[in-house]
Image (cartoon, rainbow over all chains, first blue to last red; front, side, top):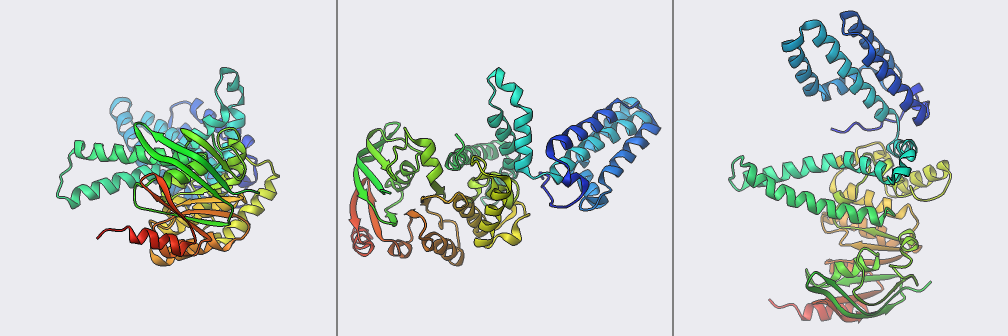
Length: 198
Length: 228
């Protein structure tokens, strides 16, 4: 599920999107540069807890975000445990968890429209490469908001399959799903054009 | 402000003539477009909103050429589609409505006030922070309408906006569309009761306009042509 903005009055909410994005990026970078040790894992955990220990965000939200990322974290932990041992596995998994949680913190405390404007500004230098920053930022935003729609379409196709006595055939799933996804893309294109996006 | 003026308009999609030689000149506030599935109603609506370009003929919407004055047309014409899911672009209700004002040059606080007023008007204020995709069908269509109206359009083109809704929600959407005297409305609909509430009706059959006038008369023509 895509992380949604939660209105509030925390220091993170009050910080402007640009500086907030830069600050969180710096923290994630700092966390990535720490050595792969038990104490580093502790420091990373501490940093993450401090970032979330503000009103209107809180530990429950941190738990929710980590639960959402449980599969990524599980696979990371398992792979590292097998090949690198417990200390590396713990440190690297905590590193990934902190990165996920801090990225979510940005989305949680910044309205998507402001985030979009900030990404646009940040991408402005790419204009000399003939990349339209407005279009690139919008593409990112539309991609994220389309994920729940695609999940709904996939569920609808599976239910229709079951209702008609079909099994779990990938071929029978892929074709109608692709058609519905393309139809949705077509309609979304019209909706964007109708709302002033060229 | 002139209304709609189409002179000898045809629309060809691939090898198919979806609209053929349509001539229509209307200057009323609310217009219903009725007709069978596949008759060309939606293409006519898309033509008026600049989403489809005429292959032949001339089109003027509010006095604007949809091709040469596309940006101005998009600013003044809002579109509501039948599938509310396809109209949601941003993750939360407030953000989705605010997205409609993205291209407008206005101070941030003014945009926020307009969004709040629109949410209030459409009864969505309590859902402001909810995920757009988790709303019910009726709420999603209200959100789509809210996103269209927040731009204060001169013309709203609604393509079967009540098609996916139950009777109560369909009534709510219709009341919102028809109540506001500040905009003109072109309504594509299969709901003949809704068509009766418009000032004028247009019957589209097999890609051409076959009747235009008072809704009762046009609906009677349409019903007379239904074969059981």
